[in-house]
Image 1 (spheres, helix red, strand yellow):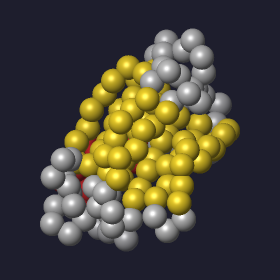
Image 2 (cartoon, one colour):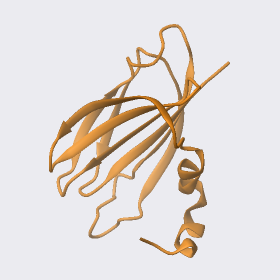
Image 3 (cartoon, helix red, strand yellow):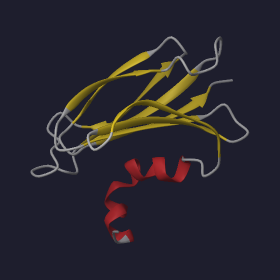
Length: 127
């Protein structure tokens, strides 16, 4: 748990929490090893928007997020909330970066999760 005041310093990152759906049409486990890491994609109910997240244990990891689950022929914009290069759960837990890029079902995103870190991706259809 946390205090609301702690989020006020990171409103750019808090945007994901404001955007993420609470009801789902589909869930996909992209990769997992119990106790070590999990990468999940969820499709918001009644839309073409997806939310992807990954988290790791005390070990930093590289992961390829394969977006082949997106609908073929459609274009999307991904907002990626990821660990910064210098992020570490012990020494620099609040280091993050936010980036945007156009994606399709052919996109494969290369992400690095810091020790004890993770990422979140909001994928919105571009019309």
